[in-house]
Image 1 (tube, rainbow, N blue to C red):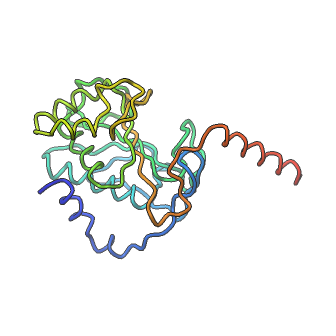
Image 2: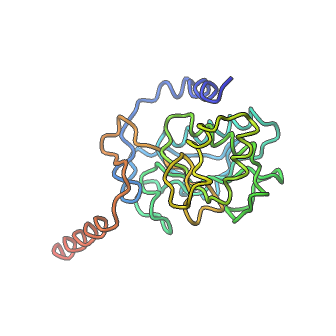
Image 3: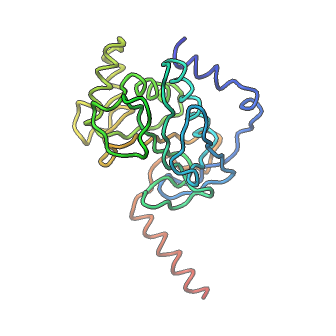
Length: 239
């Protein structure tokens, strides 16, 4: 069974079928809010690093849980997936991140060759990553149709590309998935280089069709500053 078929079969649960799409993500990932939030919980496949910041959209929460299940089904003995920050319960600024404001982003750890997750999202080398399980996880995110981007340091991408070649992925599929071996500024591929992402993957989902108040583009810093100044000015006038 292919990844997309396996994921669809796992999402076709009674609980998921009863859920009615509702507006959750407001604004952009770096200037937004979260309403009607969904909670990501610890499970057989997922281990939370910061439970207080494990709120997101229903699509994000379900996708993380289901992709962790896909890895466990495909690979026996897979340890629990370590998950860092998603968003605060009501969204908004979550230090030290610029984003993580509307439930569409999550910091995801790697599957490790040592057979158990690290105690935190610590810096790792390419030789420490379990490329087989981690590639299955990435493939699950991509095949879901929900993904916008995955940010990952380019130094950690070669072993994943090597594993993809072993599995018989076509050159076209590999190029459309990974930005490596292109330059650091390349914006081609689902998995792109971003500085500081050598200890985790940063997963960002697209805005859902029913979320009309969600903004796909990242808000420019200039606009964010202008709005914050206007807000401070209004508050000062009220006082």
